[in-house]
Amino acid sequence: MAAGDFSHQPNKLPTSGSLLANAYQMQVALREMIAKVQNQANQVGDMAHSLAGSAQHIADNVNHESDAVASMAAAIEELSVSTAHISNQGNDAKRIANSSRSSAEQGGNVV
Image (tube, rainbow, N blue to C red; front, side):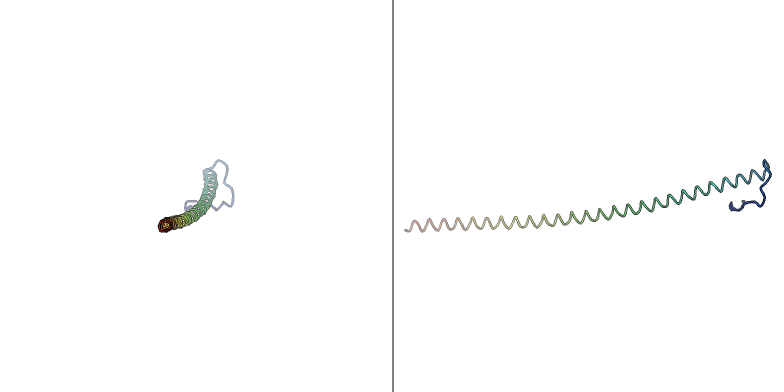
């Protein structure tokens, strides 16, 4: 017991009430306490492992969401560019229509 090994049991139980019996009871209590501490340490380790897995899952989801947001931003940018092209084409059509109207008015004046 002095060396820290609480696993050995005496070959013969000591006399009740003796110093040796009290030391044996202390050994049993320490053995049980160490077993509980070891069990709880294992549980903490398991929980830490589970928590690390959850954190990794959350990180993966955040990366996925970030990619989705980036894709949406790219799609909105493309839509904005397309809208600008349509607006430019509308302005060109208006300019051509005004030019045609002006030409038609000039042709009407000539006639």
